Image (cartoon, rainbow, N blue to C red; front, top):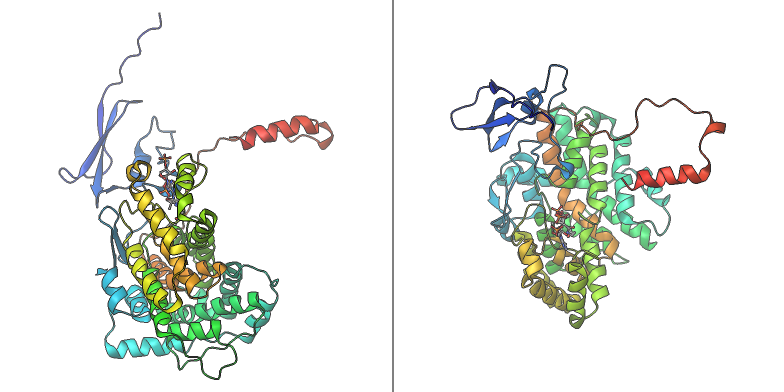
Length: 462
Ligand code: CMC
């Protein structure tokens, strides 16, 4: 019989000062040592685990958190979400109040600068952004280089990144004046680049900005103006889009905000960081979900097909797009507002037939145990695509529209990160599971193709 392993002697080690009960006591059963880790803001500093070692040579404990499900990566004052209660606030102001009473540029000011502007500051902000709606002529040539069927989001990612080559002063990220100018430029030029990508994909001539129009009206003009001398937007569409920009303006540490901060942490200019954020937004699990929702609703085709579709979702064959959220475990407050806006738009356009499928799908899903158990509710993307489609935006433009609104949030998150005293370049760790210390093999002596193939396949399955 194997000898019973002697229990290690307990020694208590304080990693750093705990304050009363605001601490966590951990016993490392490998050594018997007890550690007291301070808790602040309901978090434990990841680096305090590094002192938990088996011996002096040991690197120390790391925290394994794929997808950063339980990791806090920054302190922020931009937006607040209570996922259980379905609350979203920008700088402390409830989203519903802003959607009802504010406009996009005022909300962008609030998000970027932290306070609502007075009338004078708002007028200056609007003026400064409007003065930056034009882009360098070379950008039109750059845009022309894309294939006729290029996805507008791909074009946006590339052209916004290319802006860094036009504004080398943007590298001066620690200069507050430079940051302010880049913020105005980015907010001013995003709708222009977005509309250019649409016009290119449609083979239509580009429309230059009309600075007599407001922010959203000007965007609609650059999108849809044909031969008329003055473009007059439908006021219901203009307001609906304004509300959608407000609702998309920020959402704390989502995938694209994290990309903005992570890429920005290398001290790169904000245009390059926004290109990275746009790239993150493009994916179907993030800003591309609204496009995916329309594809899904079209595929379902009719209310009578919903139960069969839900069955397949429950069997794990696919996800219900526009449903579920990492943070919201109740109804996404943005989805509630968007659903109302949809019916206002339909009064102008006639009903988008997909809305009936969406409403029925929501009802059936919300009564189903699978969705109740997992706390899956409609998110911001569930109804937004239906509105965009009714207003005449092609599906490929949906993530681009999301990016216009979200630029305000990216800028605020980036600026906060640049000024954060605790800021470090984002550089996570890994658990290495690969080979070590192999000797180089001459090409003639390597395994036969079949054996190699098997080895590669075996590795891919890991
Ligand atoms: N349809 C069916 N099942 C789902 C869905 C869904 N849309 N979302 C999550 N689940 C299930 C998932 O299968 C898992 O079940 P189980 O525990 O049995 O394995 C459970 O719910 C938890 O899911 P998760 O993947 O661990 O959750 P997550 O926090 O990692 O993912 C999400 C969040 C938004 C990526 C996910 O809910 C999803 O893929 N939704 C569909 C895509 C979508 O609508 N994205 C837009 C998000 S909101 C706007 C934005 O961020 O841009």
